[in-house]
Image (cartoon, rainbow, N blue to C red; front, top):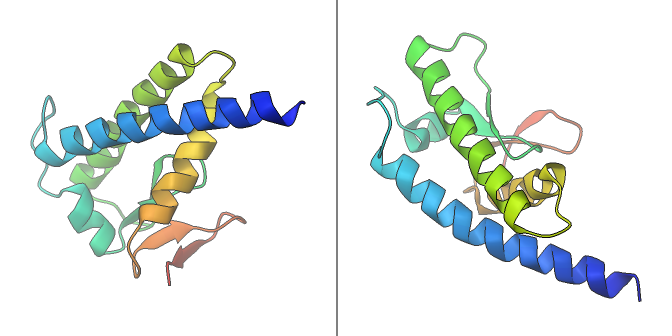
Length: 128
């Protein structure tokens, strides 16, 4: 049936995303291979300055971000894009947009209560 290949592909992509996100989270958390930032992702999320978007990337919630915060967001998003491209390239039939969409769902689901996420309409909301 048409659902079986689609379901298989979704499961394959999700497995690859889980592995990639785990490695990416560790890399960003430890600051490996990047410049030292005055603020880390967890602090920025806890303060409501940034949040998870529906497209799989971090977005600026604050309207007046510091230079360090802009650099942090750019660095994280560049790493995510590279990771998503890698997953898409290694998963037959997967498009970058598929990987981004599935990663977004996973990241938003993992976001702790009280932090900011983008809802389906693109509006920033505190996660209940």
